[in-house]
Image 1 (spheres, rainbow, N blue to C red):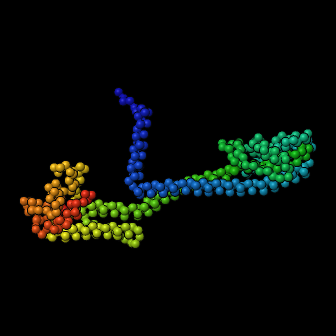
Image 2 (cartoon, rainbow, N blue to C red):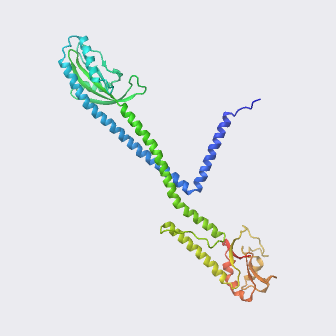
Image 3 (cartoon, rainbow, N blue to C red):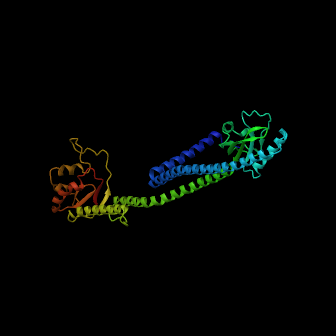
Amino acid sequence: MSLPGPTPRSLTSGILDRVRGVVMRMRHTWRRSLQFRVVAITMVLGMAVLAVVGSYLYQQIAAGLVEERRQVSMAEAIQLTKKVKVAFDRTDKAQDQESLSLFARDIVQDAAGTERSRYVVLLRLVGNSATTFIPPVVSGEVNFTEIPESLQDAVTRDSGNQHVQIVTLKLTGVPDPVPSIVVGQQVSLPLAGGYGIYYVYPMERERESLNVVRTTFVYGGLVLVLLIGAVSYVVTRLVVAPVRRAAEVAQRLAAGHLAERMESRGEDDLASLAMSFNAMAVGLERQISQLEDSIPGAAPVRLRRVPRAPHPPHDDPHGRRPHPRLPGRIRHRWSRGLPNSSSVNSTGSRRCSPTCSRSADSTLAPQLSTSKRLICGIPSARWLPSTRD
């Protein structure tokens, strides 16, 4: 018996869970890693800048290609129109409509050429009242209905100048419409009157060139974004690595390793940070040494973390809150001034807090009285000196 396959709902749920997990991991990395944030922001900004610059360059290149083809097409159309006019003026085949139609086809085919770089269309002008009528003559794969009516009207109104229009034409044998430049001018045929001759220049080569440029921009932009990300990663690492080293040294200092120092190189801001950090460590070690020297005969002092209770117990019989760093009996005796002999325990040592101990000596009373605020009287202190075992 075969087991039922996963349902579409379970597949969708699994995909959503995976996407949610990826998003959560990226969010965690974003919040924890400064280097990741800098690299990501740099790459996003780089992509935006490249998109804007690439779009502008692409438009400029496209406009340049179109304008160049337009100028070439207009100059070529002028020369072809002159030849067509001369051929119609000198022909002796305009005896009737049929012979004139055959001659017009020959002229159009000769003007179009065999390279398929241009097509020629001969159309009767709007308002032509001549009795001899020649049907539209077309060369190649273009249809005479593709000639815009606005261009025909412009050629009809102005008989002495060229008129240019860029349109998208559907050519026979080509699956996609092709942007084309259409140049129109008026000519006069024997017996037939005014006609308009239109030269169609498909911009297939320009479109292929733009496709190559676009593809180059896309792949080149992706490679450039990756290079920008790699460079930002290297540069950010140069900045983040000393900061991480400073955090590690700070943690070791907090653990009691007072001899830990940062490595300082050069004279830049990071070197200044390292020197300042080392100066702080030296000052901290000096303060601890002075604290040890202030009590003769004291054992070496080390730092130990002391957990603070959020609510210390009330040992005072009157309900007053005792100091969070002192037991009730010691605080009661020290509040009168100097500690008395009852504060010496059976082992011969005098205690001021559970985390520090000093050997009992009559000469220690002034020092303990002087240093009790330094050792046990700072409620916000998180680290207290303690004797080493």
